[in-house]
Length: 253
Image 1 (cartoon, rainbow, N blue to C red):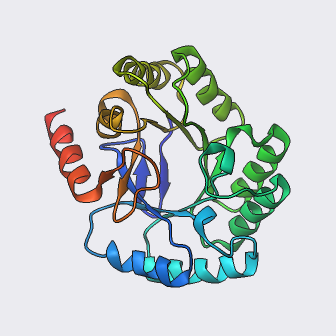
Image 2: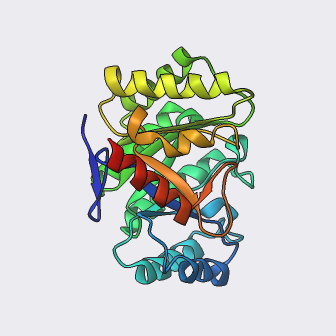
């Protein structure tokens, strides 16, 4: 399985890397989030730009990205517009979604870009090609906030992401029982051992699924999301506690 390295951070080896979401609604809130993580031990920042109140103004998005890049130095930035149908905070036309992602890829200000699997193969392939041309890594993803699909379906979706050219394959599902958590972990383990050509990121959301955010090194998930101040999805663990658990598990393996 290939690893993926951005600004010295390698996904797919060692303990899962910690990604912290930024959900500020404006420049001031985002820069405040930079200040809040200054003393935290994490690896990657995810800018959840669907929370940004001027996300429909690409020039303003670029301007803030420049400031974040300057403030964050060599910390990798994952640029994410989460669609409303997959848990994001606002609607956005598909054409605008693709145009925004392509514009940000071209800037060179972000290191990874989030692309949703079910946005349509044609548009997804264009973004993947653009990202490849500009040395930006694609985190392809799918989210189910209502249920946990069968193990076979989870593996199928992760394989679809690989086939579409993902550099990292990500899926997040909602459990309704402990059995659902086991389904997600079993699917991750099977994908990692039998099919994976690139790093995987998987999680079972909410309190019931929290164990999946901690045990990635055992089952094959290469990154986990930790909250600095405000979580971007249910079940995220505070960064400091998350690092302690990941380090403890890593030392025991």
